[in-house]
Image (tube, rainbow over all chains, first blue to last red; front, side):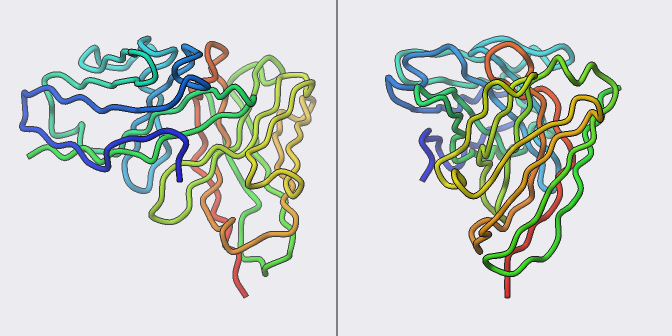
Length: 110
Length: 119
């Protein structure tokens, strides 16, 4: 069981916005701004999409944005496109000097 | 261009050992912290271990502590994971991932190497 909780699936139509939540505790997400988000296509390596809650690495579309409130972080994909269909994982630093990933969310573009 | 190439995976019996390697190129290896992350077939990502740039700080997931050992050789631009007392639940694709140097994010990943623990 993952330390961070994500919905198993989220879906939306092209052009819509969707939000993926990632719920932790006050020992991880609630205590640190070290939340990252990764995109993964089946059979491929993950790709960093967001770091430190809301920052985008160079080259990542500005349709991807991150935020945090309390113990819950969120990834929003606006203007949903077919190529956004993938798995998304959140991660956070934990107070015990370890890292954790969420269980992953499958995004389906209808 | 940054490259991380894992090797050393394969089939091993329960209780056996395996040593994974990750060869890095395209960046100043000795300036970056590194991680091992694994993914069991059909499952999500699981962080395994972290090593700081000069090996001063090393962390492990509870599931592998005492069985796995992370190390690096900055002269050879290489990261290693020594895995002992392997169990069926260690079966996974193992990725090496570079720490982005900001907030424990992983900004570069290898393509992974498959470890299968089975009799």
